[in-house]
Image (cartoon, rainbow, N blue to C red; front, top):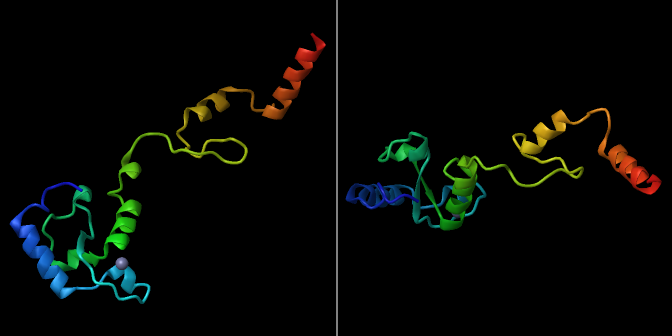
Length: 129
Ligand SMILES: [Zn+2]
């Protein structure tokens, strides 16, 4: 979390005012659970162009676990913004990330011959020689 605007007196006032207006976690409320909130979240993240000091309709109260889950899923989550390739692959070994360099190589390779054929050809070449 960036320091600004959370280190300002304006934010501290706005946060307390919002928690007094909306004291329960909206994430838990959606599951019919009442949990006292202690975190005030920007519905539209500042990083996404949301105002740093929105009205109460631009804020939501959360408990720490729900806020953590929300920010991990949301656009403010770091990994979502990264340009690194997405990790992991399908059962056949194809990378999940469509921009992975492997896909460029596979386009250049002979698409009519599956990897199993290439492997059996290699084994034949080795055993014949
Ligand atoms: Zn909650």
